[in-house]
Amino acid sequence: MANIFVGRFCPLHIGHVDLIKSNLHPTLDNNIIFIGSSATNLCDRIPFTFLERTFFIKQVFPNIRCIGIPDVWENTVWISMFDQYLKAIFSGDRQDHTVFGGSFDDLEIYYKHGYNIKIHQRSPEISGTICRKKIISGESIRDLIPEEIDSNFVTERYLLNRKKFQ
Image (tube, rainbow, N blue to C red; front, side, top):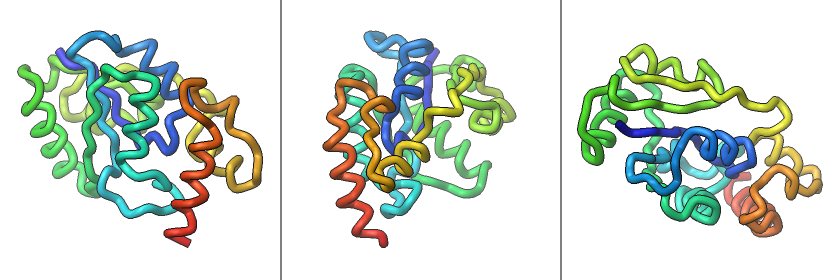
């Protein structure tokens, strides 16, 4: 059985970390994080490259496997691609795996296609959007991202990358 978390991690914040610590077991081989929008050009919603987002995750969870998955706007294509990625790594059928997330909206596609889901209620005060808005307004994000990650680095990368898509 695989324990799966799918997210964009723009940037990785303490809400993500809480979900991962509560639901995935960092030392087990059956955990995987799918980083969505892995091939998307930098934009307001995706201001960090796939490698930067992987770096953020590995700073906190060095032993969890991270796989990039590109955006696909057709649900049947998305779930087929998701299945293929998962079958390349783990055995079993959809009902043998659990996908974790912060809301039913995030997990509905997996539920409708036979995956087990587990909702970890997210905090309305913590999100990637809030982090990005704080950076733009010149506020610190130190209280929103894990202590293992240098908040100044995140801010500098965001501002540097933002210049590329403005």
